[in-house]
Image 1 (cartoon, one colour):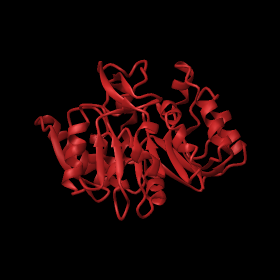
Image 2: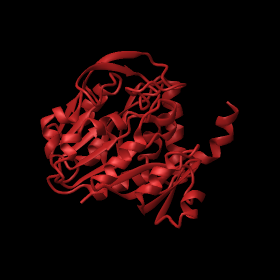
Image 3: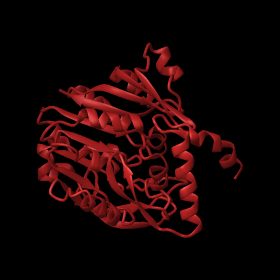
Image 4: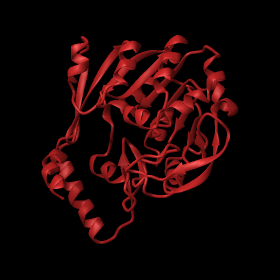
Amino acid sequence: MFSRIKNFPHQFFFTGVSKFHIFWRGFQLLFYEIFGKKQIVSNVNGFSMLLDLQTPGISKALFVYGTREILDTQIVQEVMRDNMDVIEVGGNIGYYTLLEANGSAGTIYVFEPDPRNKPILEKNIRMNNLQDRIKLYPWAVGDKSGNQQFYLGRKSNLSSTQPRFGTTTGGQLEVKSIKLDDFKPAYAASFLRMDIEGAEDSVIRGMEKILLQGKPFAFLIELHPTLYKTLNIPFVETLRHLKDIGFICRYAISAGVIEHPLLISKGYKPIRGVQETEKGHGLYEHIKMDDLIEMMDEKKKIVRSVLLVRE
């Protein structure tokens, strides 16, 4: 309770969103919670989105701020090209899926096995008339095809095929899983975005044949270095392999502060920064892969997410 009171003033600092908007939406949200409203449709980045006000996750923040992860959002908007096919692993309720389907993009193949998210994601696709552009699969993605355990997070944006200590309190279930090498449409894709709570390593290992095609490709990945260490996930080796087959780090987003001391000490400077409540994030470009690999061994999270590209 004390931490919530302490952090309350920070909730009014969100780049690009007025304090009045935040106050008014926060007041509305409190009203809805008091009267037990379960769902609401809201405008998010120009899309109509059904938001789940009961299940902990990203919905309440989207209602208040109308956006999230500002720099990641801008990267997705920058990367998208005409007729680009996209793989979205961990679609949640559709925030990035809708962004990726905007304009004249190709087909978006989205994977979301959490049964709390899937029906809302389906409705958000239909509300925006994107059924012909977005193909939804209630599967996990990993390094082999078959069935595997899926761990439900306390919040619906923290579920994963990797058990998370302290956050996996929602139980578990068996789900269908596929490696992308066995998913034929993936061979035509040129962009993959994922935020899957430590399981990103297994996704990359399961698409070796796709990557060996040698064609241009881009990953936007949220990193989880603490989990890599805790669960002995060999993500450092995977990064080295990506470097060996031609990938570079075009963008990195700092975790927690805009000007991260370690990044600054290596000669990098943010090209822009944003504030999202109590956390700041800086956008850095052209990070050396060796430096990125080194940061995975730090005790604290240095980089929140990266755009890795091969041109």
